[in-house]
Length: 265
Image 1 (tube, rainbow, N blue to C red):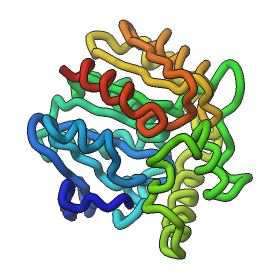
Image 2 (image 1 turned 120 degrees about the horizontal axis):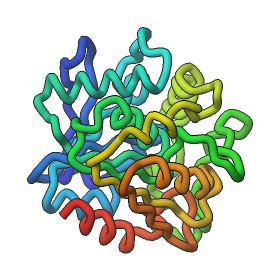
Image 3 (image 1 turned 90 degrees about the vertical axis):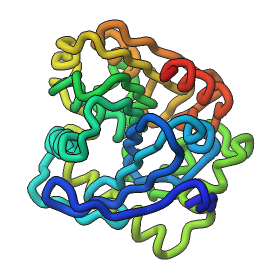
Image 4 (image 1 turned 180 degrees about the vertical axis):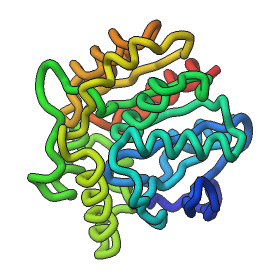
């Protein structure tokens, strides 16, 4: 994890019948941040920028990091229902949300079930919808290290890439990645990282300001999936950042921060 420890803190919440590790930082109106399929990747420039005016709430998904697995969850939709319970119990409804990759799918499932729990929603390279062109990159036929390397268009031109997940992997990091892959396999193995019913359910969502951010050269979740999200959610705006892979938050950090701040207001 990138070390800017003075900007964030970690605590364990007793909530929704379990313990949930929460990373938080900043001040202002809360912003729920749902992490990707390999876990919370660390604290970056974009976190610091948003934390100047918002309180970022970053739960470690059950089964990831220090949060214990929830045996009763069997799908991403179950996980979405769990997070809805967390928001209710913590009296955080409605809240703004930003979800990355797998976290974007979770947010979309929550919106499809009850859009009123969010004030604004941002999905970044979200899984959850089968791309009509291309395929979601398979996490299980390559190592986590290779998957990570392939998630950005040009690692050499992405200064923060070297600090993803804390820099050079340690044995503990490899173990955390394998735990994450195991949990993703348990919840989203088949169909692989998408829900065929989600586009149809999202067509019933209205009145939820939604921003979709995609890298134009995203090789993990092809842009065509973002286009389906855009067509499915009423009024959704799709922003495509060029010369960018699956991580616009660090590959095109300045443009990403500007776009998100303008949307959140």
